[in-house]
Length: 146
Image (cartoon, rainbow, N blue to C red; front, side):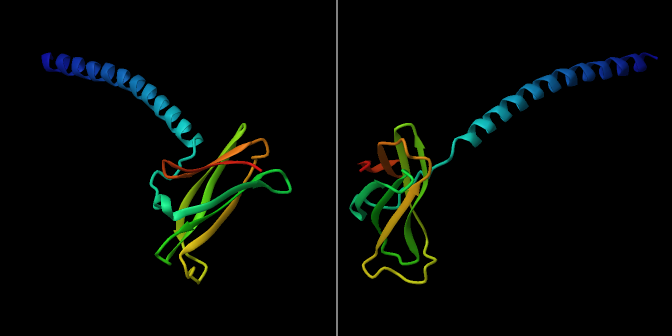
């Protein structure tokens, strides 16, 4: 009888502990979901730059027919297996940004001098007055829009 009483007390304690844990887990799950949503909303950008300062040049920014900004420049890569590219353009208010990256060379040819012409249009950038070209976390160029 006495063992039965001890066993009942142990089960009751376990039940109370489990109740507290589920509330704590629910709060932790809500916090994790909130953090995941915030992380999903903010796009990730490249954090490493494969280019030295001397390996980029001739940057310009102009407007296309619909008013969006087109960014052009040149990027040097000695390895013909890769090509220069611009990606992840975004605009907010009167500022726009674009990231210089390197991608696999899928063109089937190499640039004889290693300088790749890179260009892209930043969608939704009609209100922007300047563009920052980024490479990883460093600024390659700050361009006024012509």
